[in-house]
Image 1 (cartoon, rainbow, N blue to C red):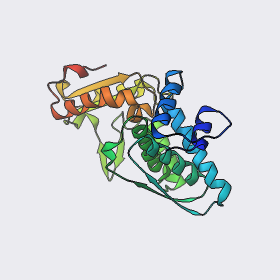
Image 2 (cartoon, helix red, strand yellow):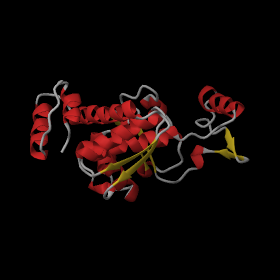
Image 3 (spheres, rainbow, N blue to C red):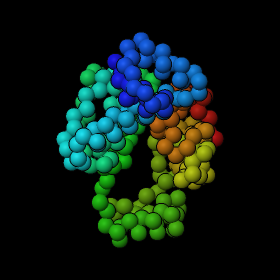
Length: 235
């Protein structure tokens, strides 16, 4: 069962009440049917849990979040993320196999995995970073086959492996032309190269529900059989 605290936070109501599992399911469905996405309810419920913990314990405290494979487990992912963001030492445990996660819970888990990856950084010397910006973006050395790495010049025309370029039509960071413009510079035979421009933002290419369900299975099939891939014609 979810407490009134979660339902009040999710629906914006004030008085707390205790609901059974069936009642909570009906309340969730009714709210979703009225236009509030399930992932928003999950975010609100997880935030309410995190705020309840913050009122009782100071940042730096150790917190263990045990999440199940249902949508309540998704609430746990949100709570863990919010607590970790303000300095709590969080351990997140999933009771069950990750592949059992579905719907909004699976989306919340995917977002958590992305945030974990994003927060893990590699320290690079400032000089090296500035060199890479100069060589790749200002001088366009990779596209001109003028970039040297580990003592060897990277010649794109020497590539013979299958290559698929993926770009987001609505990507605000990398314009599709920046991705697809390199296609004709590759030495890969025409039947082994393709470019896709899909309706997606930058992160949506790897996290969007529609892209993961509809685009990536075709990409995997293309990589397995690069010649026979009629659904992935060059953009």
